[in-house]
Amino acid sequence: MRRVVKRLARWRYGCDLAITRWIRRLRKEAPELELAGHCNGCGACCETPMIYLNRWLFYARSVRWAVLGWHRWINGFEYLGEDRSQHAFIFRCTHYDTLTGQCDSYESRPGMCRDYPRNLLDSPAPEFLTPCSFYPRARNADEIVASLRDLNLPPERLAELEIKFYVAPPLHLVPDRNGDDDGPTPPTNLRPPTAA
Image (cartoon, rainbow, N blue to C red; front, top):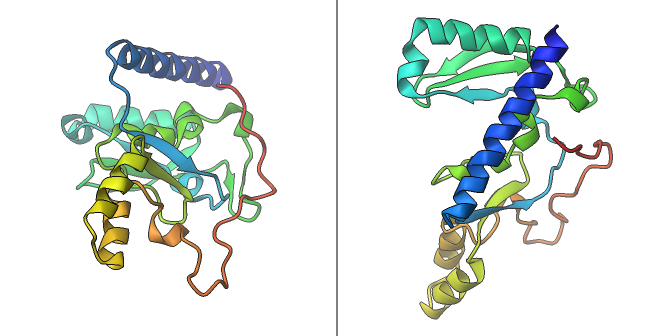
């Protein structure tokens, strides 16, 4: 029964996502940011997933009970706590193995796991997890870089603005200036993504 409900929920999530993106394309509302980088297998997104809710829903007891129950029963997420400032529940995923860095239900993982971190690009200022080597990049990055370079700014200020305007990767992804670090490398132990 749980598998059927989970499959239906994943199908519904995928349909909602496809319809939302299709409507945006029809309205010519292209997202300003695109996804750059790759999965480095850090597991930060898998180990403690967060579910964000509308402010009013976050404080409604019946909704709270339903959300926590749903994610425990269907997704195997154990409630750890909450971030009231972001109206988010913080969970521990029971399917994530911290020793191997693998998900034991990878093929049937929830839609939110399948779409991460692409789902963050819908927010005006997406914040990716620090160990994650994905990052947002402006679609018109080349134009922004050219405009910034025309300003003849000091190198430190230019680098700061390139990160702020999403035209350069965050500092934790930039290779060491001494040449000791080759930067983030893709993992070799990940399973290939499957179609949703």
